[in-house]
Length: 152
Image (cartoon, rainbow, N blue to C red):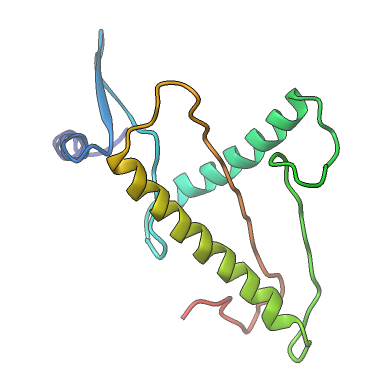
């Protein structure tokens, strides 16, 4: 990784002290890993990791579903994905509901993630039976030439 080796080493030491990464010794020196990475909303850096995370979540969902032999959606299942598109315009009676759904979904997922993280910080996970739940909600609005897409 290009960059200042001393600054990188200092950053990794700080992350290790904070418990945000784990350091394991290997024959070639320390190896760092983490079970999670949250790019704060509005952060000017880290979008590259977020794009990879989105891609990985979609591919993982598809691969798990296919590995289990489930090639169709079944009501009430926890696996897979759905794509919903709505055509709305200024003055459309459902435009605000559709756009508001996108924001509410992100807000609710963020709040829930924070609750789970707070609980997990004081209650260690069992050594077996832990499940990683991945929820991917990609959202975009096409045709925002004069609109700011919800950004202030």
